[in-house]
Length: 313
Image (cartoon, rainbow, N blue to C red; front, side, top):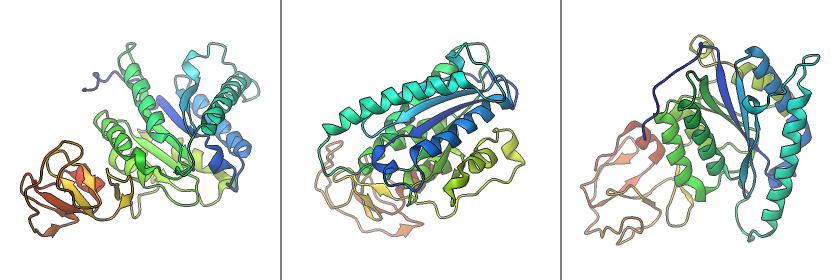
């Protein structure tokens, strides 16, 4: 579905939808405690809202099994400033966050063992895009929207399809996805999301200075980014996840009818049901193999090929 016509405020008015990782499995092993990181994040929210009185901040908690809205500055009519702080915002956010953590912990007890301890990033990203589309279609004017992902949990390969669909939806709606990854290893999903949508991806080296990273990189409005030197992507991980086992792969087979990816050769596509007659040998062109329609092709770096429309089917 196409986006609604643009009805923007001035260049420096922003709607920042923040996806806050609350996964207890990550925070229990992180060098920075959840309470410490929350103090950095709350100060960052204060700064965004004080930069312009029309700025808006929406916070979506991303848990292990669920995600939910926990704060929306537009609906807080009692918002007030006191010595540069916003006690109403903090108390409201913390109360809803506590309720969310209790609910998510109860759902985690019912989860089967063996699953990767990833957060429900696909769900929170979809909720953010739905909220932005609702803003697009309401009111005479709306601010410049962008999404900021504060994540530390590892990627969940089983969420690959849903996440990529959301990323391309954001790209079509011209909504940048910024990502700040605070985990041990970098996130391929977040790298691809920021690269494809024109956002900024950064992995802070010193988590004690998280607030400085947030302010100097992610507080920058979209208009100012055209003349400010922000971190550039270096070595983006474009690996995909197979549809059969949900594993991250470097090379695999792709159905040229529905573009489903498999790590092993199959006689029939499990997604669209197409029966492959034969495998045609071909030559790799820049990480993507061209094939005749109905055959299979070996592919490396599917995200890159998708974003640049380099499939030769």
